[in-house]
Length: 288
Image (cartoon, rainbow, N blue to C red):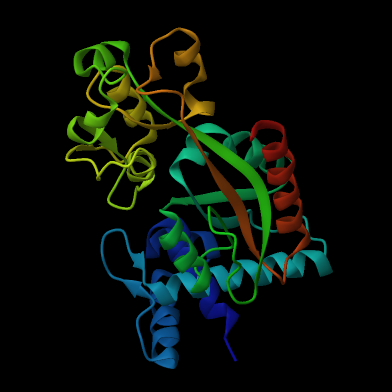
């Protein structure tokens, strides 16, 4: 049986970023916080925190923190309390959702409830791994299969187009020589980004040979606008640039629709249910 006094101490350190601040938040001494963390680690037989500056949770520490948040959410459904701490909701999301449509959906709940979001931007496989290990309370990704103990809700699709600046298209004559696309500079988000590879594959071309890697959605757009390369960009994010002719298709019109899904736990609290419904409602309004 878990001792929730010890979990509260762990959550305090994770959420405040230090033992002293956790002690102030929980109205305890710093030594009491340290003792409770040691007791928790002794009972579990492995560390829950890395003693860095600031302290960082281990994978087990994150699972315990997420478990505590789920318990708090379920308790709120049973007993209404005015003095409850804001809920810390850890979610994994893909970068393009965060850069385009997700924030207003989260705001629908955050402005009416005590919710503090800890958003972890991850590739879908990593995000699902965190979900599978119990480190997060929900996940947005392109995978439709739920994890064990979880459920999934379809959100819609995010449309991508192969775009570049007009100067880039003129320089490399991509409209006249589309077979050369794999040889010219290409923008890649990170090592896991395969959208550009899928685009080239539909043209019967090999993977890109010249790559600019940019792990920032906003930076990715700026690099395309500056003529550094072509890339698969969310239409929702760059529509103003398309309207002004600052970005154009690098070859005959092509689009790739990436489905998005909200993964959540079947033992869902009313607060998480409201969040899921708010995200789903907003996604219906803005996604294809």
